[in-house]
Image (cartoon, rainbow, N blue to C red; front, side, top):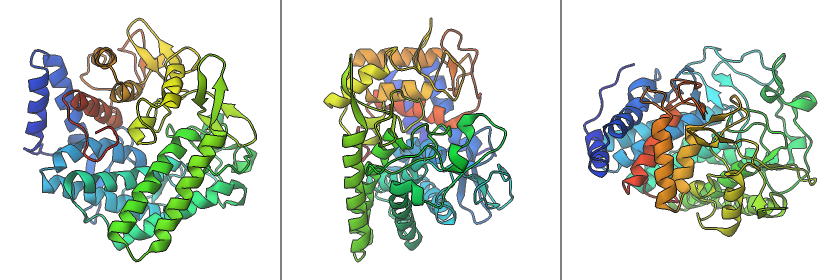
Length: 432
């Protein structure tokens, strides 16, 4: 669906041109990547609500759609029409959550497309039902940042209010996953696409954190407490509390549920999500099970450990984060990749020796030195494989070898990083 580019985008383009006047490739790549979501992935439902596909897959992920449209919050500051588009997306996302809070991706209509044969409680509206904490975090974050960046509040409807309760109830249930109604089995696939133990996943003990079946890569968790996703959830409970006070002041139960759950998750991360590394000191684990087993790595997809300050869980100069960051950007992280052209974090979701531009963008957004930011910029410009677009994974020694030539999330992350180098960030976001 070809969409006419809003004139309000021109101010954003001009900002980049002024910052990088002698870099035509950067200007060209930025403009193409920035408009990519708007011109190629933005559709409408029969009800007229924005429906955002991921690119080469015709379904809408709650996570991806939020991330893809996030840079447009900077346009919405002075463009009420764009603010309305984002509010409409939030409205649709909340309808999806109320339909099934355990689903991660949805069809534009109840067509039954997607993974309808999975052994879980599927419906024709659901494309995929891999339960991921971040699927519930992202729409709340998007609604909150829309409020803070533009003052737009039409997204805070009675339906939004109901969805907040649904999200908190699921997170509370999943603190004790053994009592959860959720299970997921996909037959005849690699282990990362299904859950063991008849769909319940690896057994966990209570920690205060909330359980996740899958990572933001849509790969199965090895241990059920995904620490970066819990970091995100803890921050989102703070957003819920603030939203509740401002827009649903008579619902004290909502605020108390959010405050209590946020506190329990943070305590769980502190007690079960950290460990002493022999070379890096006290660092965060990627996953834990509450019985002492932990996984030390990072995945490129956000939420990630590298993204903790971007999510708002900690500051970029926090001691534990810095120690974790040092570990993540070293060979001790099994998914850190060094090639002749690119050097960064990859993912078990893509082939060995592939770096993800999303991870490079997050590294740049959370970097505290101009030297590191410049190095990241140069690698991103070299990673496009002569396409002018970002990709999913890129061969660290051969950027013409990549996965997904149409991946709007990665394009949006690149856009956000470039704008941060121009001194422009989303208002109300943690790194503003």
